[in-house]
Image 1 (cartoon, helix red, strand yellow):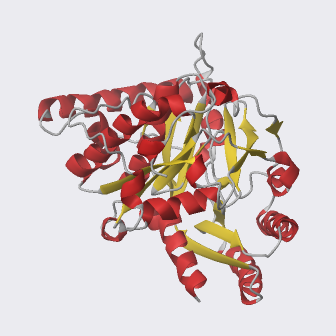
Image 2: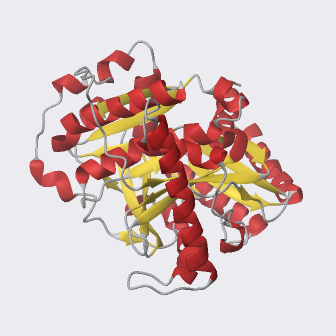
Length: 399
């Protein structure tokens, strides 16, 4: 079944995700009973940057991150206040949507694809896979996890997202799920997307980008091993904020052209060079004002600005799950060696595969709908982060 064959079955399923109960402990994602099957009339959107290795080598991983976030924000702006599940994967995203939004989503994603090619010289691969094309082989189940007052995170499991990703990437099937209604005037709304913070240096010795995929034969064994992995990470790095890569003391707004140019390219086309210059200076003025408000703990009607960095830190996605466990952790070389020794032992036993990447800093791309309200800040390791960790995991998988 291709996306063109997909027809809505039950429009009452629209509020499925919004109505789910909310979990409060990350370890709760290892309990199968906390997950619910996504309605069969929904679809999975898969995006990723193809052939990204050269761009990573050229130091352009921040652009790759930004385009991954773009594919999420344009869909969120289509669905408006409706809650839908999404997971940022570093070089792309996984998003689940009800059927009535698919035609508009196609056009918005085509606009992001064109932006990637025209302004960043990158190839954004996009696919929209009906659940009916997935659930004959795998499941997609979802849970909601409270991260902060302003951010509730989707947790996806069942193998369906990984399968949908393979369908979109495989040359034999990719055309079935690519948008066919090409429109040279396709437009997208990027409102809420921000890229205004400097790279975030580690508080310790390094930033670890880690991906773990458990390969145990039964669901109960899978749950138990993921629980054990999470417990090991908590034991080695600490369960609280000790390993959090984003803390208020390390957050600094950006003023340099290199840091602000990516957001500028999203909102202003290259042919409007004067508008680009003006927009870049507008961002500097906004950040200058932001620095003043935060430094002096200014209170406005909407927000106590002295608290804003803490709000940002609490609304990050530095640990998450979408068929694989993903974490960006600040820690020491010794701590990393301990967790890698543990993971390697389990890998040698045939119980899991893993990949990791080391950097000295983290990157952050932000979706902000309200300064003291709905927002999420996507975190990844610099210089390749999740993308290179995933590459190493695939190499282990082959062995």
